Each structure stands twice: as structure tokens, then as C-alpha cells.
Length: 417
Image 1 (tube, one colour):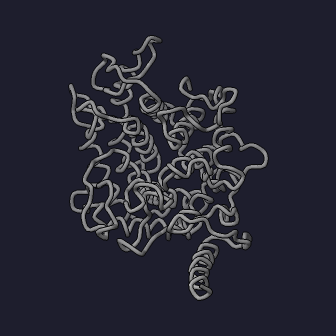
Image 2: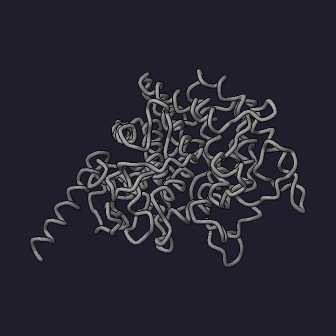
Image 3: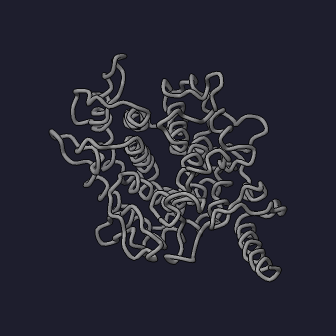
């Protein structure tokens, strides 16, 4: 929070200063929701509520107009994850006049479902929402894995089978794509749709694996369908093998693509935080995997703590967790990753409850049609669509209706012109 200026006079709630992109603030506040749940400390509750609400807007879609030059599908999803965290952990209520935490996540899901693009690569979400942003022709794991996880989490929380259907659709597309090797369980970063996704960028990032480990855990916990255990076990083992190389006898997490070479950038420093968070949740949701996961979290928590004595204040965290000598790096990402590693251990030590659902004590009341009557819904090209007035329709019906409106609207325009 020492890096956060959104609560200062003239600041914008939910924004971090340069060099941090908008999405990282959403991720940071998701970790602070966890922090509140794990510790009971209410110090940052007001700032967290204000930040998430301000960036969600009264539509709950997390589509602020001043972020159109940088916001991608994955960026929007990380703010939606913060709202989902708040719903699943019974966090303090949103500000008056804003949707519920659950409705915010549903709003994001609905805006992304209509962006599912079958014109190339057989489906999938593009990395970017808007045509003018670099990466619009890239279909990647951060966008599609996040959509899959959102569907799985919403399915588990609400019990609505529409979300199971969408999560299954997103998984099937991923499983059949070049983004995934189901023989080795390798998760690649993305692929250009200019070549119809026939080759992949094989860059290895931990959170790409974490998205699917976590999403599969939520889906298995909800459906109890054993078919999800095969990829879950495979991707989990691949994650532990690749990103937890043995160092001095301890399995401490390493962001292998950049950390050993000293060239991690601002975004890369955050990736451990998400992976560890979702691994910890997986241990809660699939108890049979807990004994496999906890030793890695414990080792990483100790390693992270050993890096948090740097800087002029003596409490700044570095990123190289396999040494107790501060590595000289600092920033929001390093703090988030260390916080996630350390507080994840509190789940195990304090035997905290798994994320709530509406049937196990969750109090956030949803709106299945959220985000579809806001005027900020976008189609697959990223263009804004007209306002939809059938807000009383829900689930699959509203999504189907929206696709038909977009399709028929486009046909009508061609005829009239």
C-alpha cells in the first residue's frame, strides 16, 4: 500500500502510479481481500472497497473509458477476480449504488462471452478487446485461461449450469489448441490468429499454469466429475516440476523464464503471487492434492520471508526466494508475490474454510444479466454495441439473445447501406 496513491488527494481509486498498468491494481486489491480474510485485519478494507467499486463502475463491467488504450480481456479479468474473491470470502459490502461483488464478476463474464470469436482458430478470446491495441490478433492463455476460471468459479458459486457449459467450452477449445500439449501438460503463452493459431509462443509463465490448475480445481469441486482430475493432476505436476526447482533442498518457487537471468519486468514480478494463491485454493478445493501442494507453499513462504528485509526501510521484499540476501529489486509485484506466499500458509496453519458458495454461506447476491444493459458491452471486434433492454432475461438466454442482436444488426446495416 506504500506504492498506492489512489487514496490520496487528487488520486484515482483503483489506480497505481507509473510504471504499473491498470490491471495490476486490480490484482493487488484481490490480494488485500485475501489478506483481510486470512488475518482479520480491517486496516485496508475501506480503500479496497472504494478501489474495486470505482473501477467497476455502476455497470460492474470494469470497462473505464480512460483505459481503452491498455485494457485487454485478461486485464478486465483480474479486476473481476478481485470481485470474485470478495464474493467467495464474504468481504465487506460494496459501496451504495454499485452492483454486488458477484454481479460484478457476472457482468465481466457476460461482456467476454459475446467476444468469443469463432472467425479464427476455431474460437477463443483475443488478448485485446479493442481493434486498435497491439495484440488484438493474438489469442492467448491469460485471456482464455481467465475466462475459463471465471466460468468455473461462477458455476461453483451460483450452481448455474450455464457457467459449467461455458467453462467446458473454453476448456475444450484450449485442449484442442496449440496452447496446450495434453501429452506433456505444457501450457504455452499464445498464438497469432493471422496464421489461424497453427503455431504457439512457447514462453513459460507460471500464472498461465496457475489459471488452469485453479480453474480445474473449482470445476472438479463443483461437478465432482473425475474427468477434470486428469488434466488437473497433469498440469499441477507440470507446474511443480517446472517452477519449483530444488534449491538447497527446498522447493522454492522460481519464475524460470526471467528470474534466473535478472530480466523480469514489472508484470513478471507479479506472476508468482497468482500461482501460489491458486495452488493454495486448489489444496482447499481438492483435499486429495493438499499433501502434494503444501510443502511447496511452505518452502516458498519461508523463502519469500527471507527476502523481505531489504530497502532503506528494512521491510522491502525482493524476488529471489532461494537466498536470504535481498536481491535489490522492489515494487508492487515483489510485495504481492511475497504476501501471497506468506499468507497462503495461513490457510493450512489456521485450517481456514474454502471459498464460500451461495449454498455454503456465501452472501453476495448475483445478477445473471449483469453487464448486458450497460451500454458498455462490446462485440468480438471490440466495438461498442447498443444498449440491450432485456435485462430481465438471464443465463444462456440473454447471451444467445445478445449474439443474435449483434448478428442481425450487422446484417441489417449491410442491407441498409
